[in-house]
Length: 225
Image (cartoon, rainbow, N blue to C red; front, side, top):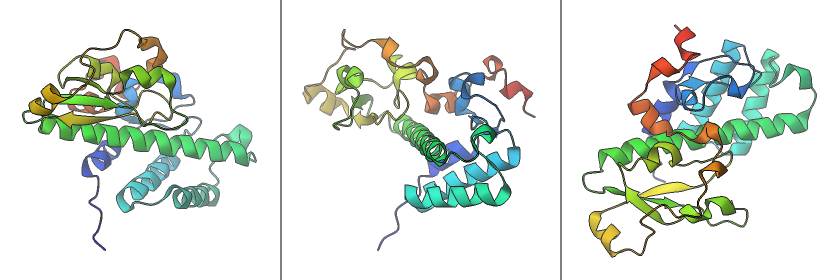
């Protein structure tokens, strides 16, 4: 069986993040999370490095979530680390937190990787197409953006390049000029899309943040040497 190519840009995005211990996720700005690796309630830097290592291994080797979860738990228990010291014996909480940690880091890393790759080919495929995964549990508030095609340098992508919320499965495809002109796409942001449906902490583009960061606005990262 042929090996699946490693997602090098997604891996690079996760690897280059600085370890920033915080108690609450919202202690730093949404855009700052593109540069900082954090896990709420985990303030031990060794634990944070280990958690990131588990995520990188899962991404690099294509480890399924259930196997990742088992390895994650073993690492935490072996070292006496907790996802929340105040909820040590709450397995339902731990399972929920592990899912959020895995999902959020995987989606933002792959999104940043795709953004970088899309920018690199933008001279040949200068339009980007917003797609919402058509699933039974899809967010109806994201539906207006489905099949929206805009130039790759449109300011819309600065705030609403997906994911656009916790567990959001929206994604972007690239289009050539010919495909854009021939397609029956929405070519303006629909009036029934409300920016308020995207939480403030998600109104940023992780991939663009990495390519053109403004560290002056990131208070916590300035403390990291």
